[in-house]
Length: 147
Image (cartoon, rainbow, N blue to C red; front, side):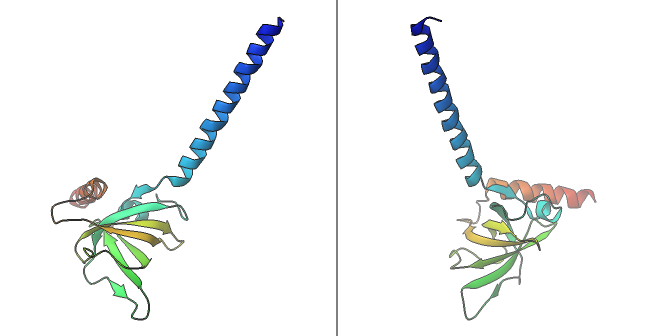
């Protein structure tokens, strides 16, 4: 093989290896940061994985909020009107958080299907509904109407 061709082949091979490694590292980093959205019905049916960061959304169930008087720990239930999921959170809840309102919580499910939330977000006005929650509520409503 001609020395110039050999040098080009080695250069092109090195560039391809570097690009492949960069793409592999980016995919690995993105895999660690993906937060999938699940509805309470999907969690109740066992579709959501344990110990993986995910988001759960729905309406806060009336009379389900239990606050610890000694700490900032709060436990409440979220529903899509078909199933309920218990959420535990330690921290200050958003000002707009209240029973009967839509929320999205981000955290990990434990073995008992309780979401240990790291973040709780409340919708910002009465008319807005995050698209994932609206879609999950519509699906749950259609399921209950067909049964």
